[in-house]
Image 1: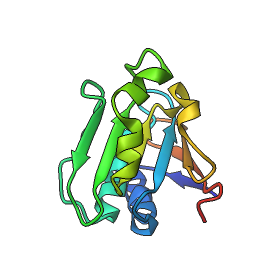
Image 2: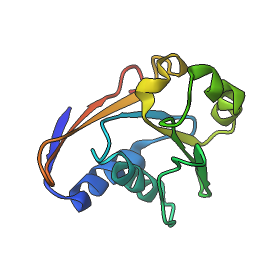
Image 3: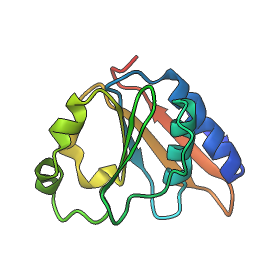
Length: 140
């Protein structure tokens, strides 16, 4: 599925649509360059999960946790030096906690994802325009 958005608000709304469909244990891997809209899409996912919080990029903390009926674990792999570091911070533990894991800069940790991972590629197509490609893999 490919979607075109023309504002940050529309990108957030597309994330919200996806968030409303996610179940406990879902993993969403986000791909896109700096400024593509990964955090905006993550804000939408949180909203779709019913989480009312100021969702920010966890670039310096690696993971932000948001409480909800289904918790959201929002990761940013940008500063990781290796895939092994993800497992060192407890990736497997987060997967076992029954929340939704959303991962920015997923290209840095390709071995962390299985066939059920939902892959979202966001391409910056101009100042406000984004192309969002959602691959549900075996998740549906």
